[in-house]
Image (cartoon, rainbow, N blue to C red; front, side, top):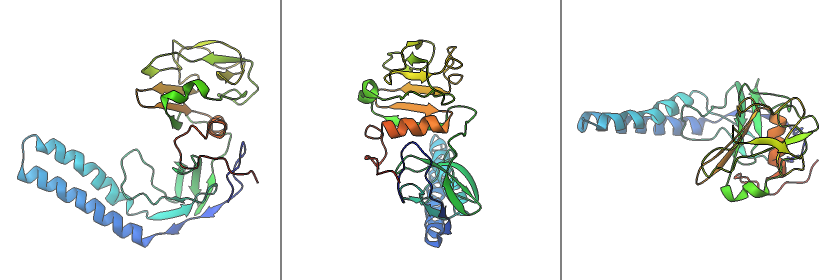
Length: 243
């Protein structure tokens, strides 16, 4: 399998049922629920709140045991779907799972009809959801490319991100007055106006420890990932040769 650059992976992989994973999830989920019950019954008081928190991963892990499916990532070969514990916002691999992220190489995949394929480059979410995490020190060196992050057309202008230490950098303090030189967020003449980062199809949010960059358009996400793979917090740091 080859991790391609600037284009969809041509590989298609197949889903298999992992019975060992099923057993592990049942044991882990039951264990969390057992601890939750012991906290609530034995200690009472404020421990009921802690009991409820412990029960959440237990319940969702038990539910995920009904879909103990795994498959190789079509781009890098890493095993998808083998997470032991599950939380409410984490998709479980099944027969109709879409937009599942590979935690090894960062691409998103669809699992449909027993096969796994990288999502189409033209897919656009209702709100930015294709996300990448970076260290704050990487912000000044990010390469944004020359395609509009909203539609992929050639950029004619660019968004200069706000300089907050904490907060949304692509919102009202960002200014659409930069040149599309790759150092700022590229937009075409039709996109980028307003102050709403969701309307701009891009959310760049900073905390003291990390920067989250989220896109609506998958092609924009993939292009950004390819350009900044050395800075991205994914395990496949170096881009493999294109096929």
